[in-house]
Amino acid sequence: MKLYHEIIVDLGERSYPIIIGNKLLDGGFDLTDFISGSDCLVVSNVTIAPLHIEHLLPNLMGKKIETIELLDGESHKSVATMQKILDKLVASGANRDTTVIALGGGVIGDITGFAAACYMRGVSFIQVPTTLLSQVDASVGGKTGVNHPEGKNLIGAFHQPKVVMIDTDTLSTLPDREFRAGLAEVIKHAVIYDMAYFVWLEENMQLLLDKDSAALAYAIRISCEIKASVVAEDEREADRRAILNFGHTFGHAIERCLGYGEWLHGEAVAVGMLMAARLSDIDSADLARLQKLIAAAGLPVDVPKIEFEDWLSAIGMDKKVQQKRLRFVLLKALGNSHVTSSFDESLLYGILGTDS
Image 1: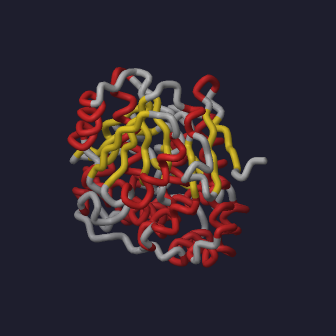
Image 2: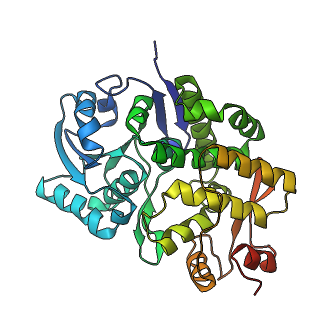
């Protein structure tokens, strides 16, 4: 009898399961079924490793395990940090049968996946996300990468994991600020795709903030189902998948302009969603509902002070730019989104704090 929920990310020969449940660490789910060789490298950081790495080892019984602990935080999501993973792989004699395992939040997952994509032109990796943001978003879909001083996630590759194992018990150790930041991605999935889910969040946000186990399990499952569905339609973000970046053009610009790590990713995305909603053709009542929900999650709603030229420089480096045309994920209504290069430039200038 399964004591967990399983979602399949349907990508043909690259398909993989997302396993969601509690008590999965300490051997509650056997990861060795997804590891072809005998060698593993577990990548974590100095915050997460002391909390969870010993609990992961029983899930890897019979495997030869190396570990590496990186510094914590968005400011360390860099080529230099990824190099440390590659150096560890080389020093340990890792071959193409080695599996790299990401144990941590979105930063660890992205860096680890990118290192796995690069080492020997690609080795297997597994995601074991321990933050809400990584559980509902970053660990699913195969986007990997690191930041560049000129833009977030500008250097990376698509590299799908073999399995994503989500143990919801890890959220009990998550600081409240990081937990709230993860709720931004939960809200995003509802706003872009599922109005019924949006209404459920309006009615159950306090339960989520209280970390009610049933409410959390439901939100993680629905968010993962939404992301898995969108990724299956458009694995490499040629078109439809870009809706998952709602709020991210502005959010990434906030992170870059304020300095990586000053605002958490989810905090920046929360404000970015409101900015994108203001640029959209939706009525004021829907905009007010979105702002109320974001505020109820304990997330910021006010745009930080950033110079106009810095805004333009940052959003100009967005990965959705095509033929030097800005493209935004905008709303037709709550629960209904699209990607477009057609928008009111004067309205955009006003949102950025100028009437230029």
